[in-house]
Length: 194
Image 1 (cartoon, helix red, strand yellow):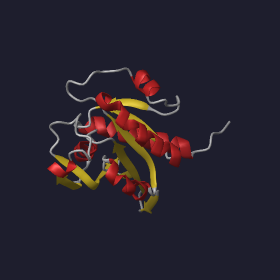
Image 2 (cartoon, rainbow, N blue to C red):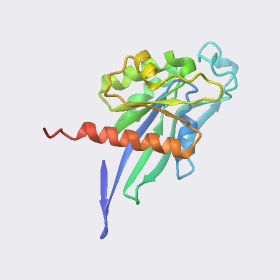
Image 3 (cartoon, rainbow, N blue to C red):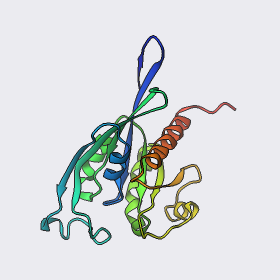
């Protein structure tokens, strides 16, 4: 976490990663909450992706992130600046994840319950790196709704990992997830007193 001091207060900045499977809503999330025009590295899906990318659960998806999404949001009274890095979802771009998570204090794993199996590798990635993360169930229109406890059980998560429900299209909902991961990551970094 970086800090800048002025005569009146201290401003901190940090990095949060937005991850998840292909088509889980990462680009939408970053775009909904960013206070700057987000940087997007999207490419149009072509015939070459057939058989390479798993498109079955996302028939209307026309583009895909090929490097990252980047955005920024200021929380509080300009006290905390979060830099958001959205990962690409396809397996062929996962080699970039190690670089994207370097220096991050935490991650939000977006989950589409219609394709829950796409979340297992992402959860494993953050568990292996001991990076604090939370699960954000992205409520897609027409998708079934499951209690957060059932999703926790299906992903074999310990009780300590937060599971929340959001709508990645809505700024306030995405902002709620960012506040939740910032608080969770801070609690993981702060030694308990007692």
